[in-house]
Length: 93
Length: 299
Image (cartoon, rainbow over all chains, first blue to last red; front, side):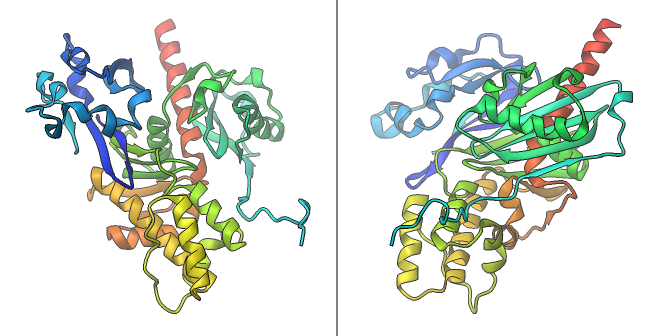
């Protein structure tokens, strides 16, 4: 399943896209530790698969939460995207 | 002039529905399941017998989620002669799903809407737009009603039922009439430009002051809502190989639905069932599957 977490408001669209099918077989889940904001968490989804999701508390504040890792703040590559061995994570902005 | 509460009309108030299939003998059923969808604006309860729809009740959500869930379910129970004890398994869903005290399990409304749409339209439905009271979801699903992709926006009320209620109150026109009135215009006005409902309300007021008719302002708002929702759905894409279906209260507003169809270039399919029950129906069907799994394990 492709899960898009985030929001769209007057300033733009901020979504993190996770291909949760890739999470099922991922044992180490390096994205969890890679994110300095601890955005991600492991949950059992509606189909009983253990997957990664963006924690509810962060879903409406992604633009601010991810700002420190964005190129404008000097980052070369997003740590969460770089950590995922399956390239299952993408930022839409 | 002071207007008393009794005189103040609630233009935003939509019709609540309760229906039970009186030809169905639920006492003879093997499995009776229920789905309760406690949304931010409306609450629905659906009861299924052996995986078939027995009845539903759609009501307004109050400030007490457990009470809203109870009221929604009581509508079906009272009409069918059932009691809570007659229901074998209950799944709660929606914004207030964790506050359904009698639910055996909770599931997200995303999975439930897809499953419910699959029942309401059939296995051909692939793209689903749920226009809820205070959020909007674009969902892609497979032929079994399993979600393959989703996206939701619950940060902003633009493109939601609550936004339409605000406009109904402002225009002093019942919310159920807005859609039809939005077509009673000489020419299509430009869409309301503000993305925020609060500012859109101010802009609508400005349009009235500038000489626009009420119908034209409603048309401008419907167009704005359609444009916002289409921007959302285009991020997941409409599957050209399957049907496109709209659920939620806004699905009953042709002013928005027709404009979405025009912008997407795709016609939405219709279902004989109330578009607001998709989430609760999906929850009741999940409950049925869970009971089947339990029975298979036990055997």
